[in-house]
Structure formats: C-alpha cells, structure tokens
Image 1: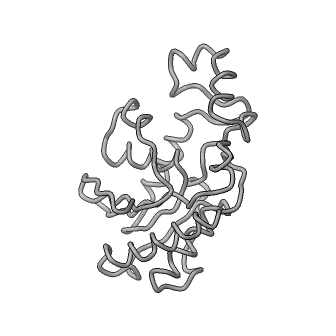
Image 2: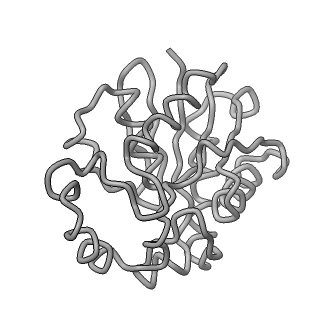
Image 3: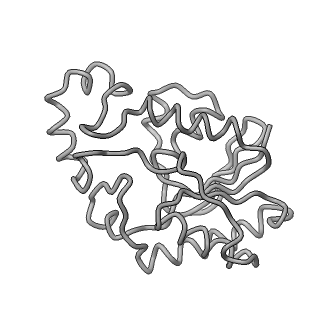
Length: 193
C-alpha cells in the first residue's frame, strides 16, 4: 500500500467566477499561489523525507504551477516532477466555462442525469465512469509513495478508489484548494485549512 499526498491545485480565476474549466485552464489567483506555497511548507512538516517521494501532476497549467510552488516551498527544485494526462480534470466538453447551475439545467434534459449520474457524459466530453477508469489506470501503474497535484474530480476519484467509497460518498466530497489529503494504509488524514 502506497502513501499518497494528494493536493488540489490552488484557487484559480475560474474558481472565483464560479465556472467549470474542465480540461481548459485559467491562472492561479494570488491566493491560489499562497495556498500552493503553504502546502509545500505543510508537506515538509508531514512527510519525513519529501525528496524520497515521487511527484506527479496533471499537465494542466494550474496543476503544474501549484506543483512547482509546492516543491519550492518544500525546499526542492521546482521542476523535479513529471506529468500524467490521466490526472487531468474530467473533460466537460460543451459544458466547459459554464457554472454548475447552468450545467445542471442543461443536464436535466438527459435522462441519465437523473437516473445514473455516474454514466452521464458531458456533451462532447467524459462521464464519471470514464474519469474513474482513467484514474484507476494511473493508480495501478504508480510505483512509489507520491505527491499528486491534480483537480477536484480526480481528487474525488483517487479518494474513492483508495478508500473503497461508494459513488454517493464520492460525490458528497468537495476537495478544497488548500491542504493535503494523505492516504496511507487505507486511512485518510487531512492536513490544512
């Protein structure tokens, strides 16, 4: 069983606007950059040797910037990490840049939204089943304890798969932009705000 330090990217401009970026991007806010630095200091205090960990991020700019700030604040070189496309946020397709209320209004036209949210696919995008399979593939190939910087949807899926949670429990969790979730030995510990 690996130990994972899972971090959601810092606050971004689209978070402030209440919009969903999906696999598109917007820059971190000043607060988001501060959150990333605070997570780096936190990592240094909770991981016995951060330099011994693997560091993997989603290739989206907001996750890479967060990772670089985390590493620098933890006393490591900013660019000593890899990226994995399987850690990208769910592809929201035509729902990208909408707010959740706008997405829900559109989705109500699709019977799957009401009957099986897990199989509902964003038009031109992915379903939660697609995301779960992608994240599971990543976890199955992970070879060492790691720090993972990713997105809300992926954080939910990592948590579901590692802790064996139900779909309902997965959807109820809303990962914050600050703090670190440590998953080790089937136990979740949250550090931060």
